[in-house]
Length: 634
Image (cartoon, rainbow, N blue to C red):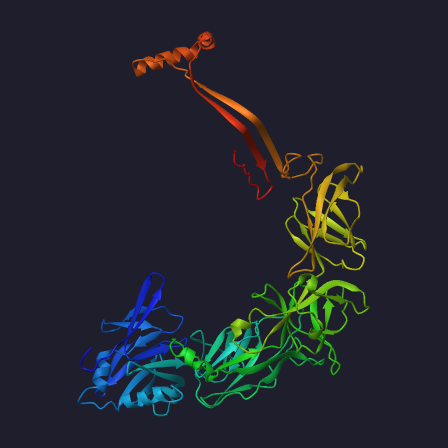
C-alpha cells in the first residue's frame, strides 16, 4: 500500500461466490471460551483495538464508552496503521512493541504479549518449527499492597509464514490445559485451584468441603488457566445410579494434572469411583467403577497441513476415559464384575441421553463379567468382552446363557463406539450391547396378549414393541395370541424360522372362525436378534370390535379393476342449431332442454367419429400409507 504498509488477501471460491479475506500481518485467534480485550502499545501508550470474542460468540460489533465501534469476533487483526507506527516509524525501532490482553470481567485481569522485531519473525518462519509456544501471566491490579492479586495464565501459540517475502503472523489464545469428559456420563469435577472455566463460566463454590465444582456433561470440556505447575481434581458421578449402587469421589485421592508447555502426563493414570453406602462411607464389599486419565498427544507431524488453517492444533488436552461401555436395551440387567481376585460386585448403571438406553462403565475386555436379571434375580454365566462377537446386532449377536447353562433369551454384541470420532483419542471405546433374542411388534389396531409355552404373559399395545424372553434357534417358540378386547384368539402357533405365515383367529366362547392374521418373522437389527411382526386382524366385521377403524371386509386389501376393449367407437353430435345471435341460441337451448318429446325426435348432425383400438382402463388401489394410486390410462 506504500509507506511499508502491508495487507494480505486470501481468495476463496465457494460455489458461485468468491470470498476475499483482507487482513493485516498480525492476527489474533481466540480458541477459548472467554472474551479478551486487546490493546496495542504505541509510543508508551496503549491504543484499544477491540474484543477478541470467545468461540461461542458470533461476530458482532460492540460500542465502547467513547461511542466508537470496535470489532468483536473469534479472530481480530491488528490495524495496519498501528503496525506501521510501531515497526516502520523513524521514532520507533520496533524493539518495544507489545499487545495488552485483558480478560473481559469485573476483575480486570491484564497481561502483556511482547512482540519481537520483524527480523525475528523472519527467523521463526524459516526455522524447523514455524510455531512457537509461550505463556503469559495475567494479574489483576490492586491498590491494597497486602491483598494478593488474582492471576491467570494464558497460553499463546505463534505461527509465522512468509508470504511473498513478508511475514504473516498468527497468534492463538489458548487455555493451559483442556479437560475433556469422554466417559459419556455426567461427571462432577472439583478443584481448589482458581481460574477454571466451563463454557466461559466459573464453577459453583463447595460450601462444605471448599473448592469449586463443575458439572461436566458428556464430551464437554473444562478450560484451565490456573497458575502454578499442577492442578488437582477430584471426580464423582453427577447423577444417581440405577439400583442404588452408589459411588463416591474418585480414588486415589486428588488427581494431579501437570501444567506448563513442557510438562505433560507421561502415562495414563488408572482410577476408580469407589462404592459407598447411603451414608457416604466406603462399602465393605469394596470395588468400584474403573476409569483412567490420559493426555491426548498432539504431534507436530500434522503441522504442515494445518499451517494454512485458522487452528493451531497444538493445545494440550487431558481426557477422562473408560475402558468399555455397557448398553442395556432391555432395562432389566445390571452388570457384575466377577474377577477371580476379588469378591463379585455390582457395577453402577445410568440413564444416558446420548444412547437413549441404560449404560454402565465396564472394566477391561479381558476381565470377567456376569449379568443380574432384575425381574427374576437370575444371573448369567461369567464371560468377558473378548468372548462376544464384534457385530452390529441381529443374527450375528452372541447368545447368553443362565448360570445353569440354559438359554436366557438374550444376546450380546460389541461394536466400536460411534463417539470415538468426537473424543479425538487413540483409545477405541468398545460398546457391549445387551439385546433380547426376540421382540414382538404389534402392527394391528388392537391390544394383544401373548402367552408362551411356559405360561408367561406379555401385553403389547398397538404400534408398540415388547420383549419375548425365548430363543428361536434350538426348538423355536410357541405362542398364543389373544385379542383381549374382542374375545378371540389364535391356536398355539409354532415359530421356528423366518418367513410369513397366516393363522386363523377364532372366537374364545364359541370357537367359530372370526378371521385371520398374518405373522412375519424377520432378522432383527441393533435392538434384537429376531423380530416377530403381527399384522392386523382381518375379521370382515364379524367380530364386534370396539373403536376398530375397520369398516369393510376388503379394507386395506390390494384391489385392481381392469376394463379392456379391442375396439371402441366414439361419435360426437352437434346438439345445437345455427342461429344469428347469442340470445336466440339461448332461447332455443332452453326450449330444447324443457321439451322431452322434441329431444327424442330431433336428429342431430355428426361432428366427429373416433375409433379407439386396444383400449384399456385400469384402476388400482394399493395398501401403502393409506394412499390410492390410479394407473395411467392407455
